[in-house]
Image 1 (cartoon, one colour):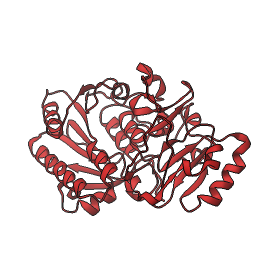
Image 2 (cartoon, rainbow, N blue to C red):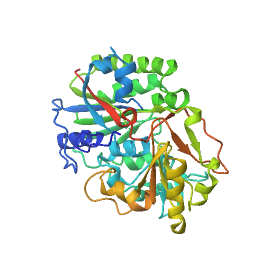
Image 3 (cartoon, rainbow, N blue to C red):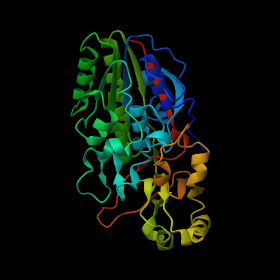
Length: 372
């Protein structure tokens, strides 16, 4: 089990950026020097440390690893990317997984898409109120830019309030935007560039796939060429989390456990490797007994309040909404198991790569710093 270390995590990386650009970080900064005036942070979604050191040996990115960091808990995009954008852990920003129960709206949400899990229209500009922290860009004394494929989404606009947003449609457009923004003017700049497709391919094909490795080589070559083009800029590459492949026989479906499902007051939230369970108070003992007797091989059962007390979600004062969003219990999946439920309006998903858990493959990410 690899737990987040909030002294050597992606949160501390962002605290280092805050310290560089005149803000006051809540978390302790990493002890690396950002010597150049400008900083470019490229986040490659899904590029775990274990994966890079196993499948990316000899690559430009692997040769420039400076440290091994942890993600946050849960080690998943919605929680970790929000930590990158806000500079604080889920303890403060309160976005606790792909699916988040929002008591204030009375709905389980697909939070990055800013809409109910069951579909329909979104929540409009309520994302700023849903999120418990301000954007990093609003605090830095620098010109901030964010390069993302979804520049017009409510999630992007809320988490990047204060930054200029730039979009792209393919990998060539991504690197052209990075190069262009880096050379825009002589102002002090912090640039965040987000590339999601490695994660998407790992979900679809698994982490060992030849297609995934081929795409990584393309990213690696493009970043190396970019570094050789740029001047007077700190170049950092990291990830939000890694992934693990889940065989079909290791997927636990709630439909196969009706007794367990009947103990819940609402569908699962969180992620397939760390699921939040909201349990009927009268059925708490039945729920615990079923998990311990029938699912002991596939998951560990924790009380949500215990994980909060142990600091899994972060340090310092928590968001007042955090307890409402992490349920009564958390199922943390063992080995290469995952758990899912399916709403009547949903199609059964067929993802191979999964994340959110506490394996080294999911939790550890690289800190890569390259010299221009």
